[in-house]
Length: 475
Image (cartoon, rainbow, N blue to C red; front, side, top):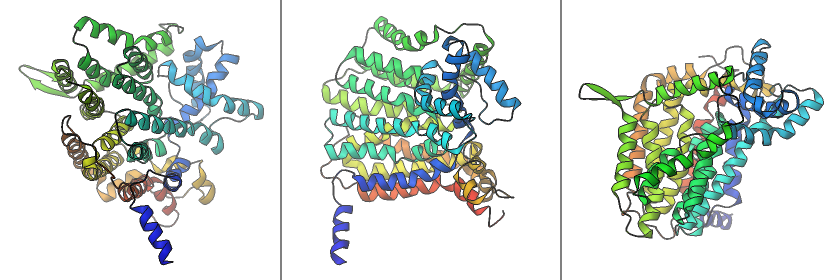
């Protein structure tokens, strides 16, 4: 027994890369929220994957996809079917959902199953996010190795992303599709590091076609390496090429497109809604902050390849952080920050333990803040129809996350928690400025990773825990 304890201790505190045991532990903890909660948006994504093929076979072809989606929306609402939301994303999102949804469409068509009426069909659809996450993990490893991070630390960077609080909460619970564009953003950064301009533009163009957030990484990076304003403008136009081309087959001016444009308009209002007083008017804070980063990068002349690789690590983390704290953003968008914090920790591994402390505390503060301010995304009632209801039944008096948040003060102090997030992640960036980052040797990661993993999982279990204890106690 003493020998076993010693071998476990040696394994636990060694500097080796994460192994099978680490991944088994992660998935064992991650599957709790993943299989117990099915958020309304995630149910809508199940519909989109099946309707992609229904549109081809009975909806007049893919050029009618948006109109067919709106027709199905009316059908879902008339029949009380969950996940009834408008079709608002650019088409590449639906291509991914359609490819993954092909087997689901076959099964549902053959057996006459409504795709959101069965737990297993919904879990199959949700599993696309696990596939996307694993691709991101691999590409984080490749990006890290490309800039000289040792093999073990590069593998830990991928694992740290996978086990981040944002993955537990925004994928495990909320099941959001923001992870789809991440592989292309990472490939673009990899190309930036390797000075491959056309791949840099191509991959950013694909990434932006999923959601526009990678644009705010692209702009500073392109200004770091290009000082000709005309070429910068041309490169920016190229980055929108995939988005524009993917929208050409769809007729303009239809009711479905009007709905899509209206939702985009609401997003732009929120995007520019937080303003700072300036002279006799007010300007959007996001313009000042992102604009300031871009101006700095335009004026900055990279001295060597070392500086280039450090900025390739720092700018994505800084841009995503500044972006999402500067307007009233949806909670699940913060996952765009997670891969870059993991890369930053691996590259600046001489400060690894400090970075892990502030990243862990900051992200826990963010998740709890979101539980208070955006409770409806993570509510315990989204367990309806999933495995907990099948095991325990639906409780007569469900303890909702909203009630829990009111009981413990999350609804009152979510602003304080968000301030904790800003302070902690801001500290991570402050101690990782280009020129100050250094790689460490034989960094011990596993004990810190394990503690972080358990804490992250524990917070993500709260909605499922509330559902279970509702059978035994009442608030």
